[in-house]
Image (tube, rainbow over the protein chains, first blue to last red):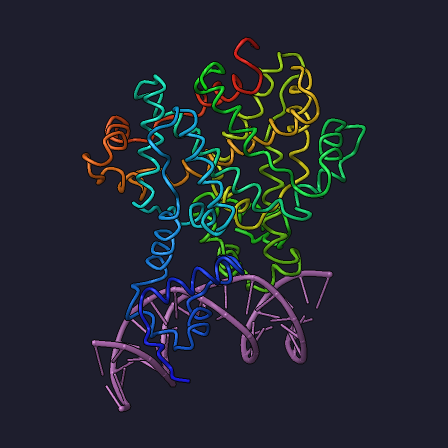
Length: 205
Length: 205
DNA sequence: ACCTGAACACCGTTCAAGT
DNA sequence: ACCTGAACACCGTTCAAGT
Protein backbone atom coordinates (compact mmCIF):
# COMPACT_ATOMS: atom_id res chain seq x y z
CA UNK A 1 0.00 0.00 0.00
CA UNK A 2 1.27 3.43 -0.91
CA UNK A 3 2.00 6.19 1.59
CA UNK A 4 0.20 9.42 0.67
CA UNK A 5 0.77 11.13 3.99
CA UNK A 6 1.98 14.55 2.87
CA UNK A 7 1.39 16.67 5.94
CA UNK A 8 -1.13 19.51 5.68
CA UNK A 9 -3.04 21.72 8.12
CA UNK A 10 -6.31 19.84 7.67
CA UNK A 11 -4.98 16.41 8.60
CA UNK A 12 -3.16 17.95 11.56
CA UNK A 13 -6.36 19.59 12.83
CA UNK A 14 -8.48 16.50 12.17
CA UNK A 15 -6.06 14.25 14.02
CA UNK A 16 -5.80 16.75 16.88
CA UNK A 17 -9.61 16.81 17.17
CA UNK A 18 -9.71 13.03 17.33
CA UNK A 19 -7.12 12.91 20.12
CA UNK A 20 -8.76 15.73 22.10
CA UNK A 21 -12.18 14.11 21.78
CA UNK A 22 -10.94 10.66 22.80
CA UNK A 23 -8.38 11.48 25.49
CA UNK A 24 -8.89 15.11 26.50
CA UNK A 25 -6.90 18.28 26.07
CA UNK A 26 -4.19 17.25 28.53
CA UNK A 27 -3.25 14.33 26.26
CA UNK A 28 -3.01 16.56 23.21
CA UNK A 29 0.63 17.62 23.24
CA UNK A 30 2.48 18.64 20.12
CA UNK A 31 4.82 15.70 20.57
CA UNK A 32 1.97 13.24 21.09
CA UNK A 33 0.25 14.61 18.01
CA UNK A 34 3.44 14.15 16.00
CA UNK A 35 3.57 10.47 16.99
CA UNK A 36 -0.05 10.10 15.90
CA UNK A 37 0.80 11.67 12.52
CA UNK A 38 3.93 9.51 12.22
CA UNK A 39 6.06 12.58 11.71
CA UNK A 40 8.69 14.44 13.70
CA UNK A 41 7.34 16.98 16.18
CA UNK A 42 8.90 19.84 14.26
CA UNK A 43 7.32 18.97 10.91
CA UNK A 44 3.99 20.39 12.09
CA UNK A 45 5.47 23.83 12.71
CA UNK A 46 5.74 24.28 8.93
CA UNK A 47 1.91 24.21 8.76
CA UNK A 48 0.76 25.58 12.09
CA UNK A 49 2.42 28.50 13.86
CA UNK A 50 2.15 27.10 17.38
CA UNK A 51 -0.13 25.24 19.77
CA UNK A 52 -2.44 28.22 20.19
CA UNK A 53 -3.08 28.44 16.45
CA UNK A 54 -3.80 24.72 16.40
CA UNK A 55 -6.37 25.10 19.19
CA UNK A 56 -7.89 28.06 17.36
CA UNK A 57 -8.27 26.00 14.20
CA UNK A 58 -9.83 23.16 16.17
CA UNK A 59 -12.24 25.66 17.74
CA UNK A 60 -13.09 26.91 14.24
CA UNK A 61 -14.21 23.45 13.21
CA UNK A 62 -16.38 23.00 16.29
CA UNK A 63 -17.89 26.51 16.03
CA UNK A 64 -18.79 25.68 12.44
CA UNK A 65 -20.89 22.77 13.71
CA UNK A 66 -23.16 25.10 15.69
CA UNK A 67 -26.27 25.26 13.53
CA UNK A 68 -28.10 28.62 13.63
CA UNK A 69 -31.90 28.51 14.06
CA UNK A 70 -34.40 29.06 11.25
CA UNK A 71 -35.58 32.68 11.22
CA UNK A 72 -39.19 31.51 11.27
CA UNK A 73 -39.76 30.42 14.87
CA UNK A 74 -40.72 32.40 17.96
CA UNK A 75 -37.93 34.20 19.86
CA UNK A 76 -38.10 31.62 22.63
CA UNK A 77 -37.81 28.74 20.15
CA UNK A 78 -34.85 30.33 18.41
CA UNK A 79 -32.97 31.01 21.65
CA UNK A 80 -33.66 27.47 22.79
CA UNK A 81 -32.26 26.19 19.50
CA UNK A 82 -28.98 28.13 19.84
CA UNK A 83 -28.45 27.13 23.45
CA UNK A 84 -29.29 23.49 22.75
CA UNK A 85 -26.76 23.52 19.92
CA UNK A 86 -24.07 24.91 22.23
CA UNK A 87 -24.97 22.28 24.79
CA UNK A 88 -24.72 19.52 22.21
CA UNK A 89 -21.33 20.74 21.01
CA UNK A 90 -19.90 21.12 24.51
CA UNK A 91 -21.05 17.60 25.29
CA UNK A 92 -19.41 16.26 22.15
CA UNK A 93 -16.17 18.20 22.61
CA UNK A 94 -15.61 18.73 26.30
CA UNK A 95 -12.10 19.99 25.62
CA UNK A 96 -13.69 23.20 24.28
CA UNK A 97 -14.66 24.23 27.80
CA UNK A 98 -11.09 23.76 28.95
CA UNK A 99 -9.84 25.88 26.06
CA UNK A 100 -12.33 28.59 26.93
CA UNK A 101 -11.44 28.41 30.62
CA UNK A 102 -7.68 28.40 30.35
CA UNK A 103 -6.85 30.07 27.02
CA UNK A 104 -9.81 32.39 26.42
CA UNK A 105 -9.96 31.72 22.69
CA UNK A 106 -12.93 32.29 20.35
CA UNK A 107 -13.83 31.67 16.73
CA UNK A 108 -15.67 34.01 14.31
CA UNK A 109 -17.59 30.99 13.04
CA UNK A 110 -19.80 31.31 16.13
CA UNK A 111 -21.07 34.70 14.92
CA UNK A 112 -24.19 33.42 13.05
CA UNK A 113 -25.42 31.70 16.21
CA UNK A 114 -24.70 34.81 18.31
CA UNK A 115 -26.45 37.04 15.78
CA UNK A 116 -29.52 34.80 15.89
CA UNK A 117 -29.58 34.87 19.69
CA UNK A 118 -29.28 38.66 19.88
CA UNK A 119 -31.93 39.10 17.18
CA UNK A 120 -34.33 36.79 19.00
CA UNK A 121 -33.86 38.67 22.28
CA UNK A 122 -34.51 41.97 20.48
CA UNK A 123 -37.60 40.47 18.80
CA UNK A 124 -38.87 39.46 22.23
CA UNK A 125 -38.93 43.15 23.14
CA UNK A 126 -35.68 43.53 25.08
CA UNK A 127 -33.71 46.74 24.66
CA UNK A 128 -29.99 46.77 23.90
CA UNK A 129 -28.83 46.75 27.52
CA UNK A 130 -31.22 43.94 28.42
CA UNK A 131 -30.13 41.97 25.36
CA UNK A 132 -26.50 42.38 26.34
CA UNK A 133 -27.08 41.24 29.91
CA UNK A 134 -29.44 38.40 29.08
CA UNK A 135 -27.25 36.99 26.34
CA UNK A 136 -24.33 37.02 28.77
CA UNK A 137 -26.50 35.10 31.24
CA UNK A 138 -27.44 32.52 28.63
CA UNK A 139 -23.84 31.95 27.54
CA UNK A 140 -22.59 31.83 31.11
CA UNK A 141 -25.20 29.18 31.82
CA UNK A 142 -24.08 27.14 28.80
CA UNK A 143 -20.41 27.40 29.79
CA UNK A 144 -21.10 26.66 33.45
CA UNK A 145 -23.30 23.69 32.66
CA UNK A 146 -20.61 22.25 30.41
CA UNK A 147 -17.90 22.88 33.00
CA UNK A 148 -19.85 21.22 35.81
CA UNK A 149 -21.20 18.22 33.91
CA UNK A 150 -17.74 17.70 32.38
CA UNK A 151 -16.46 16.59 35.78
CA UNK A 152 -19.69 15.10 37.04
CA UNK A 153 -19.44 11.86 35.13
CA UNK A 154 -19.12 8.75 37.24
CA UNK A 155 -18.22 9.53 40.82
CA UNK A 156 -16.92 13.09 40.89
CA UNK A 157 -14.91 14.62 43.67
CA UNK A 158 -17.80 16.94 44.57
CA UNK A 159 -20.39 14.17 44.63
CA UNK A 160 -18.14 12.00 46.78
CA UNK A 161 -17.62 14.87 49.21
CA UNK A 162 -21.35 15.54 49.51
CA UNK A 163 -22.14 11.88 50.00
CA UNK A 164 -19.77 11.79 52.97
CA UNK A 165 -21.28 14.91 54.56
CA UNK A 166 -22.52 14.71 58.15
CA UNK A 167 -26.35 14.32 58.00
CA UNK A 168 -26.72 16.17 61.32
CA UNK A 169 -25.02 19.33 60.09
CA UNK A 170 -25.92 19.14 56.39
CA UNK A 171 -29.33 17.42 56.10
CA UNK A 172 -30.33 19.20 52.88
CA UNK A 173 -26.99 18.39 51.20
CA UNK A 174 -27.41 14.71 52.03
CA UNK A 175 -31.04 14.67 50.88
CA UNK A 176 -30.22 16.36 47.59
CA UNK A 177 -27.29 14.11 46.75
CA UNK A 178 -28.96 10.93 48.01
CA UNK A 179 -32.04 11.40 45.83
CA UNK A 180 -29.92 12.11 42.76
CA UNK A 181 -29.14 8.48 41.97
CA UNK A 182 -25.78 7.43 40.64
CA UNK A 183 -25.73 8.65 37.09
CA UNK A 184 -25.76 12.42 36.50
CA UNK A 185 -29.22 13.66 35.54
CA UNK A 186 -29.84 15.84 32.56
CA UNK A 187 -30.96 19.23 33.88
CA UNK A 188 -30.17 21.33 30.85
CA UNK A 189 -33.56 21.62 29.15
CA UNK A 190 -35.48 22.25 32.37
CA UNK A 191 -33.00 24.85 33.56
CA UNK A 192 -33.01 26.62 30.21
CA UNK A 193 -36.80 26.98 30.63
CA UNK A 194 -36.30 28.53 34.07
CA UNK A 195 -33.73 30.89 32.62
CA UNK A 196 -36.02 31.96 29.78
CA UNK A 197 -38.86 32.47 32.27
CA UNK A 198 -36.59 34.85 34.15
CA UNK A 199 -35.40 36.67 31.03
CA UNK A 200 -38.58 36.87 28.94
CA UNK A 201 -41.22 36.35 31.59
CA UNK A 202 -43.19 33.07 31.81
CA UNK A 203 -45.91 34.35 29.45
CA UNK A 204 -43.61 34.39 26.39
CA UNK A 205 -43.80 31.22 24.32
CA UNK B 1 17.98 39.02 61.02
CA UNK B 2 17.38 35.40 61.84
CA UNK B 3 16.06 32.81 59.40
CA UNK B 4 13.05 30.93 60.79
CA UNK B 5 12.01 29.35 57.53
CA UNK B 6 11.38 25.78 58.57
CA UNK B 7 9.18 24.47 55.81
CA UNK B 8 5.64 23.48 56.73
CA UNK B 9 2.37 22.85 54.85
CA UNK B 10 0.86 26.21 55.84
CA UNK B 11 3.66 28.36 54.44
CA UNK B 12 3.71 26.25 51.29
CA UNK B 13 -0.05 26.73 50.77
CA UNK B 14 0.08 30.44 51.66
CA UNK B 15 2.93 31.06 49.22
CA UNK B 16 1.19 29.02 46.52
CA UNK B 17 -1.98 31.10 47.00
CA UNK B 18 0.00 34.31 46.63
CA UNK B 19 1.62 33.14 43.38
CA UNK B 20 -1.67 31.82 41.93
CA UNK B 21 -3.48 35.05 42.84
CA UNK B 22 -0.76 37.28 41.38
CA UNK B 23 0.32 35.33 38.30
CA UNK B 24 -2.30 32.68 37.62
CA UNK B 25 -2.36 28.91 37.84
CA UNK B 26 -0.08 28.41 34.83
CA UNK B 27 2.75 30.17 36.70
CA UNK B 28 2.31 28.00 39.77
CA UNK B 29 4.64 25.11 39.08
CA UNK B 30 6.18 23.05 41.85
CA UNK B 31 9.62 24.22 40.75
CA UNK B 32 8.59 27.88 40.65
CA UNK B 33 7.03 27.52 44.11
CA UNK B 34 10.27 26.00 45.42
CA UNK B 35 12.23 29.04 44.19
CA UNK B 36 9.70 31.29 45.96
CA UNK B 37 10.19 29.31 49.18
CA UNK B 38 13.99 29.36 48.74
CA UNK B 39 14.10 25.61 48.99
CA UNK B 40 14.81 22.72 46.64
CA UNK B 41 11.82 21.51 44.64
CA UNK B 42 11.87 18.16 46.38
CA UNK B 43 11.73 19.55 49.91
CA UNK B 44 8.02 20.29 49.52
CA UNK B 45 7.21 16.65 48.84
CA UNK B 46 7.91 15.91 52.49
CA UNK B 47 4.88 18.08 53.42
CA UNK B 48 2.53 17.78 50.46
CA UNK B 49 1.91 14.53 48.58
CA UNK B 50 1.77 16.05 45.11
CA UNK B 51 0.49 18.99 43.10
CA UNK B 52 -3.12 17.83 43.34
CA UNK B 53 -3.00 17.78 47.13
CA UNK B 54 -1.53 21.27 47.09
CA UNK B 55 -4.36 22.56 44.89
CA UNK B 56 -6.87 20.83 47.16
CA UNK B 57 -5.42 22.57 50.23
CA UNK B 58 -5.49 25.90 48.41
CA UNK B 59 -9.12 25.27 47.52
CA UNK B 60 -9.81 24.49 51.18
CA UNK B 61 -8.60 27.92 52.19
CA UNK B 62 -10.72 29.68 49.57
CA UNK B 63 -13.82 27.58 50.33
CA UNK B 64 -13.39 28.56 53.99
CA UNK B 65 -13.72 32.21 52.97
CA UNK B 66 -17.24 31.66 51.62
CA UNK B 67 -19.43 33.14 54.35
CA UNK B 68 -22.80 31.34 54.81
CA UNK B 69 -25.89 33.57 55.14
CA UNK B 70 -27.67 34.34 58.42
CA UNK B 71 -30.63 32.00 58.89
CA UNK B 72 -32.94 34.97 59.50
CA UNK B 73 -33.48 36.40 56.00
CA UNK B 74 -35.95 35.45 53.29
CA UNK B 75 -35.07 32.53 50.99
CA UNK B 76 -34.31 34.93 48.15
CA UNK B 77 -32.00 37.02 50.35
CA UNK B 78 -30.15 33.94 51.58
CA UNK B 79 -29.63 32.54 48.08
CA UNK B 80 -28.44 35.93 46.88
CA UNK B 81 -25.96 36.01 49.75
CA UNK B 82 -24.46 32.61 48.89
CA UNK B 83 -24.17 33.37 45.19
CA UNK B 84 -22.70 36.81 45.82
CA UNK B 85 -20.12 35.22 48.10
CA UNK B 86 -19.16 32.72 45.40
CA UNK B 87 -18.93 35.55 42.89
CA UNK B 88 -16.69 37.55 45.22
CA UNK B 89 -14.40 34.58 45.81
CA UNK B 90 -14.13 33.69 42.11
CA UNK B 91 -13.26 37.30 41.38
CA UNK B 92 -10.56 37.32 44.03
CA UNK B 93 -9.13 33.91 43.07
CA UNK B 94 -9.69 33.41 39.37
CA UNK B 95 -7.42 30.37 39.42
CA UNK B 96 -10.23 28.50 41.24
CA UNK B 97 -12.28 28.40 38.04
CA UNK B 98 -9.35 26.86 36.19
CA UNK B 99 -8.95 24.24 38.89
CA UNK B 100 -12.64 23.42 38.71
CA UNK B 101 -12.54 23.31 34.91
CA UNK B 102 -9.44 21.19 34.44
CA UNK B 103 -9.05 19.15 37.63
CA UNK B 104 -12.61 18.85 38.92
CA UNK B 105 -11.63 19.26 42.56
CA UNK B 106 -13.87 20.31 45.48
CA UNK B 107 -13.54 21.10 49.17
CA UNK B 108 -15.86 20.02 52.03
CA UNK B 109 -15.49 23.52 53.46
CA UNK B 110 -18.06 24.67 50.92
CA UNK B 111 -20.73 22.48 52.55
CA UNK B 112 -22.16 25.15 54.92
CA UNK B 113 -22.84 27.45 51.95
CA UNK B 114 -24.38 24.60 49.93
CA UNK B 115 -26.54 23.56 52.88
CA UNK B 116 -27.80 27.14 53.26
CA UNK B 117 -28.64 27.34 49.56
CA UNK B 118 -30.54 24.03 49.52
CA UNK B 119 -32.39 24.98 52.72
CA UNK B 120 -33.42 28.34 51.27
CA UNK B 121 -34.73 26.70 48.08
CA UNK B 122 -36.72 24.21 50.18
CA UNK B 123 -38.06 27.06 52.34
CA UNK B 124 -39.19 28.81 49.16
CA UNK B 125 -41.47 25.83 48.52
CA UNK B 126 -39.41 23.84 46.00
CA UNK B 127 -39.51 20.06 46.22
CA UNK B 128 -36.37 17.92 46.22
CA UNK B 129 -36.13 17.52 42.44
CA UNK B 130 -36.70 21.23 41.87
CA UNK B 131 -34.13 22.09 44.54
CA UNK B 132 -31.60 19.79 42.89
CA UNK B 133 -32.13 21.27 39.44
CA UNK B 134 -32.33 24.90 40.56
CA UNK B 135 -29.23 24.70 42.72
CA UNK B 136 -27.36 23.20 39.76
CA UNK B 137 -28.55 26.13 37.65
CA UNK B 138 -27.36 28.66 40.25
CA UNK B 139 -23.92 27.06 40.57
CA UNK B 140 -23.54 26.69 36.82
CA UNK B 141 -24.32 30.38 36.47
CA UNK B 142 -21.70 31.28 39.10
CA UNK B 143 -19.07 29.09 37.42
CA UNK B 144 -19.94 30.30 33.94
CA UNK B 145 -19.90 33.95 34.95
CA UNK B 146 -16.49 33.49 36.53
CA UNK B 147 -15.18 31.63 33.50
CA UNK B 148 -16.37 34.26 31.05
CA UNK B 149 -15.42 37.38 32.99
CA UNK B 150 -12.04 35.80 33.77
CA UNK B 151 -11.07 36.21 30.14
CA UNK B 152 -13.10 39.30 29.44
CA UNK B 153 -10.75 41.75 31.07
CA UNK B 154 -9.20 44.31 28.76
CA UNK B 155 -9.58 43.36 25.11
CA UNK B 156 -10.51 39.70 25.01
CA UNK B 157 -10.28 37.48 21.98
CA UNK B 158 -14.07 37.20 21.81
CA UNK B 159 -14.65 40.95 22.09
CA UNK B 160 -12.04 41.63 19.41
CA UNK B 161 -13.70 39.12 17.10
CA UNK B 162 -17.16 40.64 17.59
CA UNK B 163 -15.87 44.15 17.05
CA UNK B 164 -14.47 43.09 13.67
CA UNK B 165 -17.73 41.42 12.60
CA UNK B 166 -19.33 42.49 9.33
CA UNK B 167 -22.19 44.93 10.21
CA UNK B 168 -24.17 43.79 7.15
CA UNK B 169 -24.30 40.16 8.20
CA UNK B 170 -24.19 40.61 11.98
CA UNK B 171 -25.95 43.89 12.83
CA UNK B 172 -27.11 42.78 16.28
CA UNK B 173 -23.64 41.50 17.21
CA UNK B 174 -22.11 44.83 16.25
CA UNK B 175 -24.78 46.80 18.10
CA UNK B 176 -24.42 44.75 21.26
CA UNK B 177 -20.63 44.93 21.36
CA UNK B 178 -20.46 48.59 20.26
CA UNK B 179 -22.78 49.79 23.00
CA UNK B 180 -20.90 47.85 25.65
CA UNK B 181 -18.08 50.36 26.06
CA UNK B 182 -14.52 49.31 26.66
CA UNK B 183 -14.45 48.04 30.21
CA UNK B 184 -16.44 44.89 31.00
CA UNK B 185 -19.73 45.73 32.71
CA UNK B 186 -20.86 44.07 35.89
CA UNK B 187 -23.89 41.94 35.00
CA UNK B 188 -23.81 39.57 37.94
CA UNK B 189 -26.38 41.11 40.29
CA UNK B 190 -28.92 41.86 37.54
CA UNK B 191 -28.58 38.38 36.04
CA UNK B 192 -28.92 36.72 39.43
CA UNK B 193 -32.26 38.55 39.80
CA UNK B 194 -33.39 37.19 36.42
CA UNK B 195 -32.32 33.71 37.47
CA UNK B 196 -34.21 33.93 40.77
CA UNK B 197 -37.28 35.22 38.93
CA UNK B 198 -37.14 32.10 36.80
CA UNK B 199 -36.58 29.74 39.72
CA UNK B 200 -38.83 31.21 42.40
CA UNK B 201 -41.22 33.26 40.28
CA UNK B 202 -41.03 37.08 40.26
CA UNK B 203 -43.48 37.39 43.16
CA UNK B 204 -41.07 35.88 45.71
CA UNK B 205 -39.04 38.50 47.59
C1' DA C 1 13.72 13.88 60.37
C1' DC C 2 14.40 16.81 56.86
C1' DC C 3 16.58 18.40 52.75
C1' DT C 4 19.39 17.83 48.35
C1' DG C 5 21.18 16.52 43.42
C1' DA C 6 20.85 13.70 39.84
C1' DA C 7 17.83 11.44 37.01
C1' DC C 8 13.53 10.01 34.37
C1' DA C 9 9.95 10.90 31.43
C1' DC C 10 7.71 14.43 29.82
C1' DC C 11 6.49 19.60 27.71
C1' DG C 12 6.66 23.75 23.56
C1' DT C 13 9.68 25.72 20.55
C1' DT C 14 14.17 27.34 17.96
C1' DC C 15 17.68 26.62 14.88
C1' DA C 16 21.04 24.67 11.93
C1' DA C 17 21.31 20.92 9.04
C1' DG C 18 19.80 17.62 5.81
C1' DT C 19 17.14 16.02 1.26
C1' DA D 1 10.06 23.28 -0.02
C1' DC D 2 9.67 20.24 3.45
C1' DC D 3 11.35 17.46 7.13
C1' DT D 4 14.76 16.09 10.87
C1' DG D 5 17.89 15.89 15.23
C1' DA D 6 19.92 18.20 18.64
C1' DA D 7 19.27 21.57 21.87
C1' DC D 8 17.09 24.98 25.21
C1' DA D 9 14.28 26.01 28.85
C1' DC D 10 10.86 24.24 31.08
C1' DC D 11 7.39 20.47 33.69
C1' DG D 12 6.06 16.71 37.95
C1' DT D 13 8.00 13.22 40.44
C1' DT D 14 11.26 9.24 42.18
C1' DC D 15 15.11 7.71 44.47
C1' DA D 16 19.49 7.30 46.55
C1' DA D 17 22.34 10.08 49.13
C1' DG D 18 23.60 13.47 52.42
C1' DT D 19 23.21 16.00 57.30
